[in-house]
Length: 340
Image 1 (cartoon, helix red, strand yellow):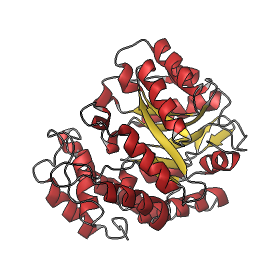
Image 2 (cartoon, helix red, strand yellow):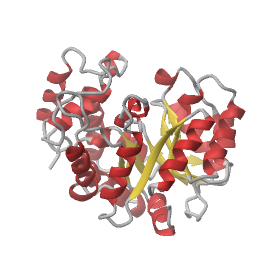
Image 3 (cartoon, one colour):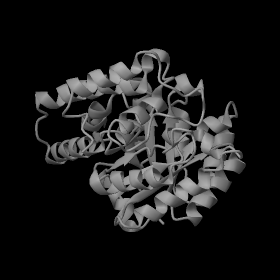
């Protein structure tokens, strides 16, 4: 349940890693490491929440032959009980019937918010997608999700996001088009809908970056429209599934600067470029992100948090040379590639 305290934490800004999936070397589910990973994110690393059932958790957990969607969501919820006010985000997929069923399941096991992935609606009209989002919002609060068009084959403009922001029950939006024009469209739409203000009203939509290639700059930037300037306050990111303690420290530093109005030091801009370079090794943009999930798992495995980089789908594997790239950035940027 999204309590008033958790809603305030969302508006203030927290680190939400996109939870990985733990598998044994033979591809079977590794419950021990799965539970341990949740404890790592919320306990050791100090993240403010976790997102489960999302792309990094592997969409194949929903396949009937795999049957891991409910067990994985339930395990994370059970482990999170030891961590006060952790915000639990459940990934749900369209179309509407499936999204509503998944939201009902997530709510029943203790999740606070549904992150609605629009890719499941494929080429459905925008009105149908918005109606589906509204249907999910009747079950539990919604976290919108703008996934990059290179993965979905579809762009959503200002008008769509204005209508999205006007939907009752939407409490946050993960902005992840990997595109500056599209990012600004979403922020402007939320501001114009009266749902994001510098004063931080109770019904404001919390803006979160999902742009793994531009994390620091998203969090630092005051997006200005007339006399109104607002900030993206947190991140719900696959990149933050790895090296999470460094991410929490970086986020805390940025939020302190933003809220104080202090000048941005040059080294923070350098860290932003470093983080984008490190993300390239993990997310594999040079191969159209083919190795992104395996890249996350590889980085986690090197710290003992996973048994290896194995994924449910045989198509999900490291690209040629990607392991060497992960090694290179971990050696080059030890301050941001820090697990413990």
